[in-house]
Structures are given as structure tokens and as C-alpha cells.
Length: 154
Image 1 (cartoon, helix red, strand yellow):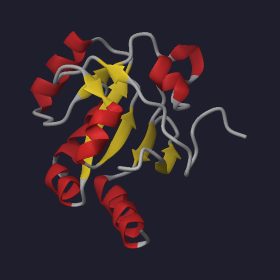
Image 2 (cartoon, one colour; image 1 turned 180 degrees about the vertical axis):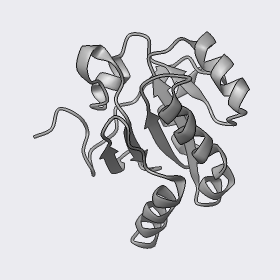
Image 3 (tube, rainbow, N blue to C red; image 1 turned 90 degrees about the vertical axis):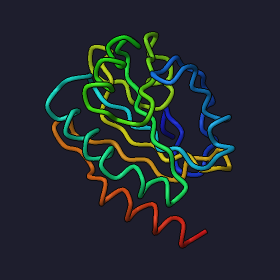
Image 4 (tube, one colour; image 1 turned 45 degrees about the vertical axis):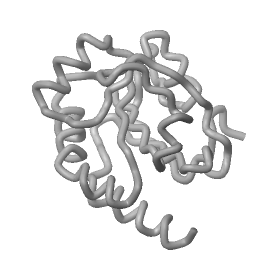
């Protein structure tokens, strides 16, 4: 049995400071599903490309009833500078204590965040989960296809 919530399990609730103020997962779920994007570090090449790719497709995620939220252990100040530079348009949450990253299986070697994607449905359950190798990332197109398939099956 995994140490983190798997598909069908209730997603651990959390509240974290973010670039948009306190981010409370279960409150956000009242508005629709949430794709939690755990990523290693603000400003790195792969993370920048990943989050910019998602930014460029935010309206498509929203059309499918899915909000995005980035999560790692960088500070809110770091997130604010990163989000402003990239004009992200979705919150970046600061998990300084690494408790949320740990709870979702997104904590790797030397307590650094790993690239993990978790889609939490409006019902508070994990609908889909994917962990990446460090230098790889799912594209927005791939994620949108997954979400469409999941929505069609519900």
C-alpha cells in the first residue's frame, strides 16, 4: 500500500500560504477539481517550462472545471517573484515545512520536492496521480487529454 493517497482515496486536506493568500484545498474543491502540481524549485529550467506550458493552457483547464495550484517548499516571496515574472495566473503554495509534499508522496531525496501531479476531484478524492522523473514533465496537452477522459467516464 502506498504511503500517499492513490486514485480513489480521499485527498489530504491542507491550508498553505500562497501567492493568492491562504490556499485551502477543500474550499477550492467547492469550485471544481484541482490539479496539484508539485515541482522542485522556482526558476529552474524544467520547472519554468512546465509551469509556462500550463499557464498557456489555463483557460482550457478552467473550461474542464479544473483549477491549477503549484506546490513546493520555496518561500512565498520566491513564489511571488517567480509567478510575477512568468505571469502565471494560478497560485503557487509554499510548503515550507514539507508536510503537504510528504503527505502526497512528492518529497524526494534530501527533502526536496519531486515532480508529481495529483488531480483531486470535486468529491475530495484523488482522480489521477502521476510521478515524473526529475527532468521530465507532462505537457498541458497530455493532462488535458487525461482530464477529458476522466470527465467522460464520470
